[in-house]
Length: 255
Length: 327
Image (cartoon, rainbow over all chains, first blue to last red; front, top):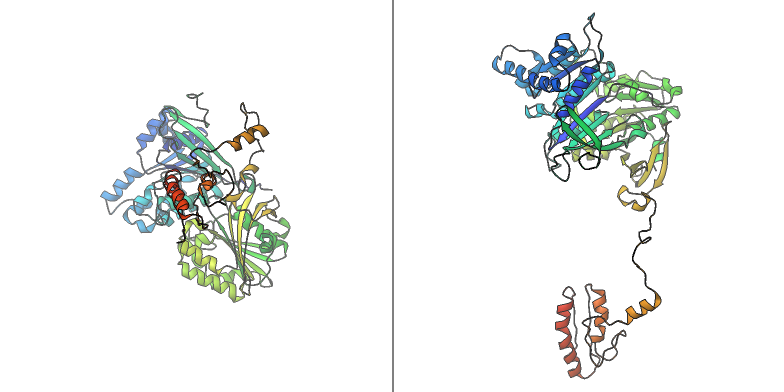
């Protein structure tokens, strides 16, 4: 009997398309659920996420002030690291020395994902959101270091604190199989081995469609053998206030 | 053969389970652990990839005292400063220290979950040396390792496979048929055996073999859906009645060279191979036609062969014709 439960590690990946709508969805979802959210926004500014979350009905500014949301604004921090070589926290150390890995980033996560001791508010299980992890590869960090980082996050957030983790990985279109040792495909495979649920977002195989923006393949990597082959394919359309999912061929535009 | 490997009790064995993103080999690894526990062996697990709770889930609880989990999951690189076991401690001395926790055990099985984690932080050649030393050194009776073959270069995977006495490569089976395993086993005498089986793992972590020697690609497709006769319920007739079939066979084919020696079926008896035309048109494959003159009047044979060749070239361009006409 498989009764073991722990937090989920959800991996969102995309190829030739943009899956960041899922990150916005998860961010507003977990904030509405009252969880403590630690968000590593490495590719966009805070105001970008704030504007979109406003449309989804959640105020990031308020959540940050209340202490529910801890937001690492990667772009702003990196400017500090690059312009003031002497100062700067260890969080973005990998910008100065990519070979040192993401240990500083993990320390940031570990310190901020737990609730404040004796804090006024009691938040739900902690959630870590990363947007996106594959950008560190372009900054010189090795695939092994990125996988070590995700392993440590999983050990702390999912196993120790019973929280959840959502990471976005973006794949480049790599055709050769042998030469992608240090590429995003290898990072993706390593993360798939670690996670419990993958959401692979792609464009439609038949090309562009105005009413259907793409398809999502949901794959459960269950604890029990029975859940092994659980794969489902959905199509989606992104609206102003979120995304809608439907089974293949069931879009309201074609019915 | 899968069950034999799982029950394998030969000393100095190294069982390698290779998986990929499509199918997780950890369930089979847990079956191996369970089988070893049931055989009253002491099992030491170097757990890098999953936590102790996740690995123990589903294992036989009655033999829990024979299972020793060494936690290399929570801090494998020593980032927190007080790690129970780090990846850098994967050496013979340190493993020996771990195993000394159970000095009275005669048969110790060492399980490594997973080798991929260690290979990410160590040189593959060094890992191979350590695995070989573990196998031969008598410190452990058997080693079972899990390897994610799609995370390493083929050379690295090949080197590790070469060390193993048994390699089980797992893949997802075709719809609803469990999983597919390809087993390669090397006996002490050097004999190599291979097998392919479809298996499934039950709730109590025992393995059931469903069928043998069925490659996932070659499973007949009609087992997927119920058999449907496509010729039923048609608005047109696909069959011929007897009279229709006779009339069809009597019909001369187009472009048959009609001559006085025209004969519909029988092969050449009279020296004329024009009568072979219907057969040759019907086969339409690379055809070797050996033409022999039977001592008929030379002029007759030459005449009909001259007439036939251009026709063959036009109507059967893909046919190779080898003609031998003895002088």
